Length: 153
Image 1 (cartoon, one colour):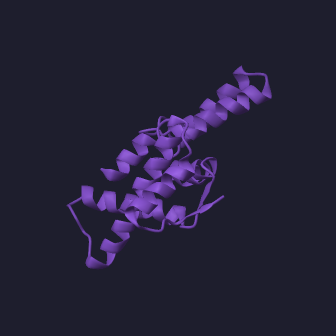
Image 2: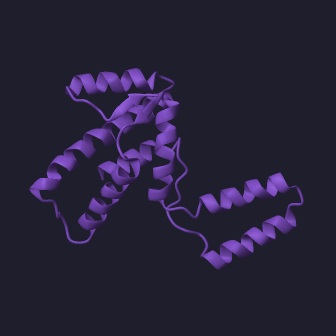
């Protein structure tokens, strides 16, 4: 639920489909129809790009967009974004298929991810409000007395 909250807070910055609209054959047919219907190549390319973007999973979108969101805030991740997202989704999937499967070893990682998720939420919300996200996340880290895996970018 915590990760879903961060995804919802990123909605303004991140377009995320809830499901795939087409299978691969339907996507190829739609792309062909768009290219035939729109003679201007740049407009056709834009429409095809939009069509393909709705085919991505939330996980893959987040992996590519999180670094850009951080860059917009003047930050860069010093953590492995792909691993972070994969671990969050893996825990969510396990929890939804039979409850908690955490060991004491993974509790530290859960705590790190929870704090990082909260920091990402602070960054996204301050950006949406037009505030200095870098200053806000520094204040957050100072108030928690923690070091975040983020560097000035």
